[in-house]
Length: 400
Image (tube, rainbow, N blue to C red):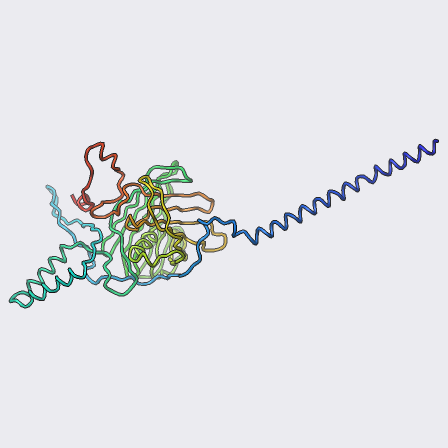
């Protein structure tokens, strides 16, 4: 009997000694199966990842690529008409510029009738000189049209001057209102963007320059972020070079080059000139200089969308900067609204780390200009509280 018990004990020991090997093989098989399944899922997702892309992020198919082209310009005086202002006591007499909105071009019947009257006057004694004097007087009295189309080129319509007001957001949190000061004359412009941010101060972006054969032509771009020193980008048109204060490097200055914010108004001017040319999928290339570099920005027309503002929803055309290279996570989205004269209704800048700066139109949904003023902070409710509404034209307010 002792032998029987000994053999049973040996068999039990052998069974227990083989159990770890079985468990090891079992877990190895489970691990290998799991890895294989995960690998197959990864390969499938890599091949079909476009299916899960958001429709608002994935740009449409490009159907046209528009390069910078000369704009159509009207031959005439290069300076805007100025009007005298009454001198204050103890101050010399001076002239202040009158900032006009874009005047509509005369209709064909009206132009024909005016031409007939001029021909009739020319047949009378002294009629030619009188007609010339009258024409000159009318030319001086008429508002300067900064975008009249009389020569061959891309249709281009510079927005009229005005202060544009926006609600500002940082990562979805609303901050103090921001402004875009825009002033344009016949051959020059000025743009100042102010965006207040909590704890860091106001971000200010200034672009000043002229209007040349390719549209807006920046001369100085000044960027100041909060308490940091300002960075200046200089567009030397004579030497055709771009210089920076952040680096000693210089770059070649091509025709149609823009800075980060003049590009927005350059795009607005092009769309104002010919909205039908900017359909979904059309991409226009802009050469844009930042505070230390410059590169080509492909701006694609995404399509018409509804933008929510404090005054309600407005229709706007969405433009987005496409990725410039692999791994480019910075984005700029601009919505131009026809009801605002194709001025920006919304601007969103997405940083590589995911942070977002946003400007959304604030004020009446009317085109800024001589009669409608600009996007004002005073609303209809504010006006009803005081019993009065400010309907003074912008040029009257700017030239008291």
